[in-house]
Length: 136
Image (cartoon, rainbow, N blue to C red; front, side, top):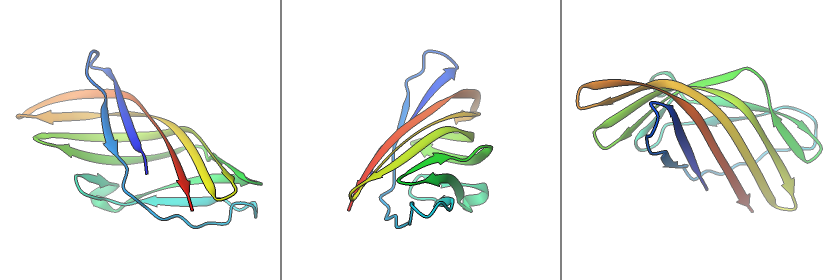
């Protein structure tokens, strides 16, 4: 389990938004050279994909490592209290590796979107970073 941090570059001066990642179980064969795909689903106050349909992200594999495949994106809606963030996320770079029974991954993305708070809409853009370690 880990966290994902949204850092705002527009408007400037805002505090980062850190969202805990949902607990999940992942089983895959990384050493056969086939691409792997993870599908994120909606949970709690986070709606993933158009209407909550979920989003998939694919990695190209080689040996015990994987690299984020190019040209992927997703829409996400996050509700935190009375604030709703509607974001279009572009997956920029990411990697994962397996050593023994431990999977370690990191990813950096960018986003544009809006923040709706008390009837006022604010345009947003920024970066997203996160890293995760899973052990069997």
